[in-house]
Length: 142
Figure 1: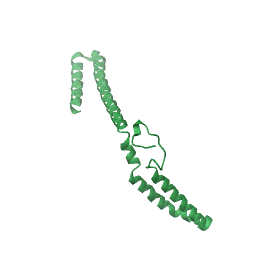
Figure 2: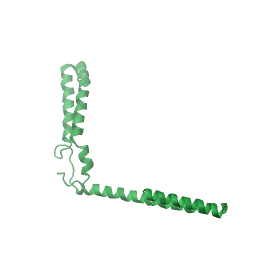
Figure 3: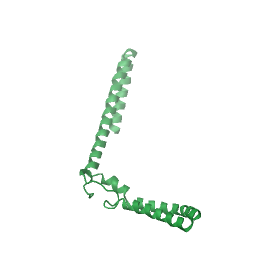
Figure 4: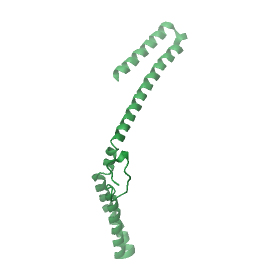
């Protein structure tokens, strides 16, 4: 990268020197030529980045998108969700007990257990959401 920056700096210096030698009447042509070189450099950089991103996307698709899926369905997320639900269970229990007594408390805890059960089972294909088996998700079963 520094070599390319040095080359661009060398081109700029040459353009400035040429302008000094030829005079102001050639200034616009010299600047236009230099800007074309900068534009070509930018286009090649953008093309290289786009090709790299496309290659990374193709590799992710070839792997079945498992890298991003494993981090989403990981143990840490389920643990964090469980902790947050337990923290929220305290005020929810109080609200349920105050408004509906013991029955409200049981209903509140049944809801908390239900939400946590559904969330924890979503990583298991047979219990959580049903998914069709296709080419990009070959390790999921029907």
